[in-house]
Length: 359
Image 1: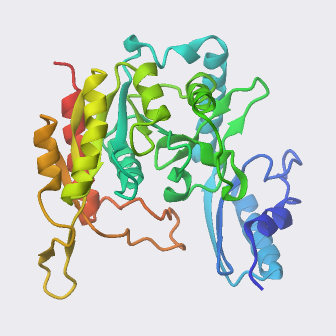
Image 2: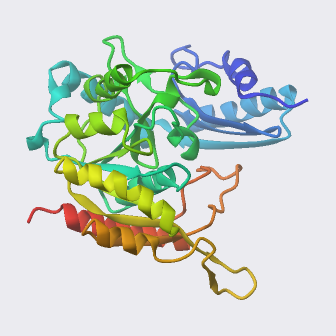
């Protein structure tokens, strides 16, 4: 019988910190739990080498009794990162309570807002967003990401996020961090993939809450994964963040580029700078001969860039990350830096940084 993540959480709940007697689950010392086909992967923060050995043995014994066949435990010392996270969290919360929450949207904050838009769904807009955010972090930037695609939220799943945000006693929300990117998404608050049936004003209120009630800390870039098209959320973003810039995602197909032009036109009409166009699924590398196969046609991204008087930032192949569920940093949609797509995203990130630099 297959085991579930909830069963893993329940069986590990009694484990306590030897020093404080508190539950390791409540202290968030056991995190990043992923369960698939009776394979369990998780990370554990320990305080001493004796604790490390004891916890490793206890967790394996409990999971084996539950029926886990393959167990991967990533151990890390408390002083390595967790103390820094606790101090940062305290600093963020205090600063937020002191009135820093409104500074993020102020033009003088220095934060570069970049909305990632598309004319239609299915072109890989969210994949581009999470990989661009990760690439910007690799360039040394502090990055936040808001999954503003409230009807079709997918960022937490794409980045392999299993834990939700922490809400302090003061009602301050601490964003979830993955690959160095701080993330907020409607997906953290909707159980069992339930549909969101909201009207425009409610969506705008949720988006505002993502700015006002979340302790983002110091950021260089804030990326917003917009819903496809030019609906209420996109309009709210344009009105709420007049200094935001925009990147348009399309496929090379002429019709997709034609539809994407509407999103670009909306940005221009609201005086938002279009940084460029990213052409996703531009080609497929033949597994046999190595030649590029242009299965969705050619030229759509370049044509769209010309129509919007901007540039083509990059062309990405049709592919999937070569990530395994057993990898310590598994995510279904984030490309590793040394892959072909990963290198293209690095170049796109450099171009974005250059375009956003003060002139």
